Amino acid sequence: MASEGHIPMCLKVLFFLIGFVLVTLVLTPDLLCHGIAGKRFFPTTLAIEDPAVSDEFTILISRIKEPAEGEEPPTVETELSGEYTKRVTPNLALSIGSEFRRLKPAGGETQKGFGNLEVGAKYEFFNNAVHETILSFGVEAELGGTGSKKARAESFSTISPAFFFGKGLGDLPEGMKYLKPLAITGLVGLNFPSRGKDVTLRDEEIEINRHPITLSWGGTIQYSLQYLQSFVKDVGLPFPLSRMIAIVEVPLETCLNRGCGGEITGSLNPGLLWFGKSVQVGLEAVIPINSRSGKKAGVLGLVHFFLDDIFPRSLGRPIFR
Image (cartoon, rainbow, N blue to C red):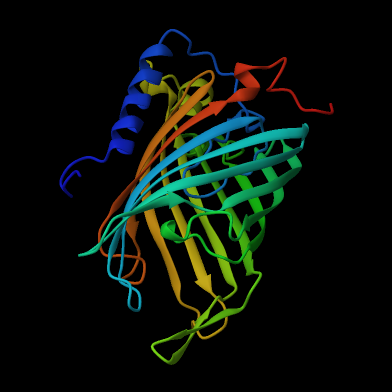
């Protein structure tokens, strides 16, 4: 077993994939990707769902240290997740995904296993080219009992409807032209557990574990060097720097009921994205916003494939056009 100071195998795989993708795509810099509103490309973000719909496959790798909670000790969680999204129509997409988790509690035995299966749907109902705006609505369901208890997969299901938005600042006046590459995206959603509590008997004592309704919310701020070069001023950035986006994500969650007192948890995630013709990669730090969210920074990485550009006449086409 690797020591805590060593890089986990899944992170080594991520770094290899990022390096491989960058090398193999150096000669194919054409932009043919999803998430377009006018001149604006909205990339796939790592911690907050983006507002666009497309045919895509996403791999996420994360490593964070969770704080102690109740009788649970601090735990280092390494997670490898995958999600496949398929458009039914040009504006409606369905998704399915899951993750593999490695949990190493302080002073305890390492546990491994798959999380629950997650299915979802998203509908993009507004796309304005002039104001670089995308609006969409979606719902996701985590299917309780489909994952491993060793990986802390919940036995109950959770239904999560959400509203997503994206707005580019390309419609700013010319006097503010260097702010035009900025864009914001975000979401507001609720998470409804299928069961409000679990009651168990341990050592002749009744334990009640409550499952509150929570509010997921947050946003991203992005600065696109590709937008700067193409639509504001060519500042001479070479490839691949000309395809980078500086980003800060702020994913947050507020506990709403069942004794949690409106507690807020979340993180501040600064990072960089790079996108090419058919692939996007990204890397972010995960900085907890308070002690309830954790005490040490983690890392989050992404490799994302635009199937609508890789297979435009087969897997990348909507089922109904």
